[in-house]
Image 1 (cartoon, rainbow, N blue to C red):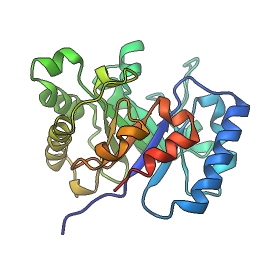
Image 2 (image 1 turned 45 degrees about the horizontal axis):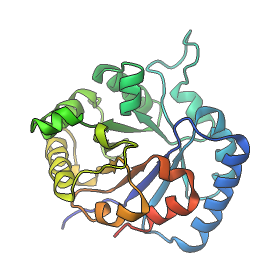
Image 3 (image 1 turned 180 degrees about the vertical axis):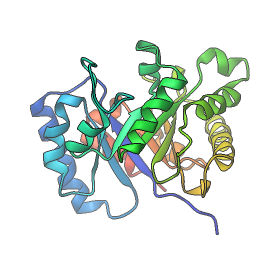
Length: 252
């Protein structure tokens, strides 16, 4: 029997929001999620670190999960401005994003750094949401799948399993640009990821592989219907409850 993981719709707020915004958003989303969603998908909110407690207090008695946007590769120490996996756990997080393309670019995070962060997160009890993706140049030269699979292999800790890992495919050129790959392009990369995972994990069919990159209500249903797409990592559209839930409602 083919295994189809329950879809996960994750909202990455990036560097947006205030305490008031976070509280109002979380209450609005929690109220509507409890009343009309059922058991078709899971929701995850990843606000900036200063807002984690605000959001966490609102959603703690709901099925909505809380996640951090990054964590350090060590448990504690002299790392000004960084956040540890233990700190995230302490405020109610169950997930953390690792290796988002903006971290890889803005902070020069290598695959090795992403692997170490993910390893620490998993060891600390968090689910590592590991991001991979190709540049426009790599896609245009026909190297998208090879690039993504190589990046994945080098970013995954050895102990990665479907229970402690989610993979998000985010083509770098599609993030925040309004551009998206075709369904066939997405299917090709997600299949490449699934095949690679089958060599690295037990029960590879249970791993959730998300698509991210200009996901919005208008294209969500088409993207979420693509084979091996098990949810979405949503950026800008996750800042409005109406849009975020509309994307989730696109789950097959």
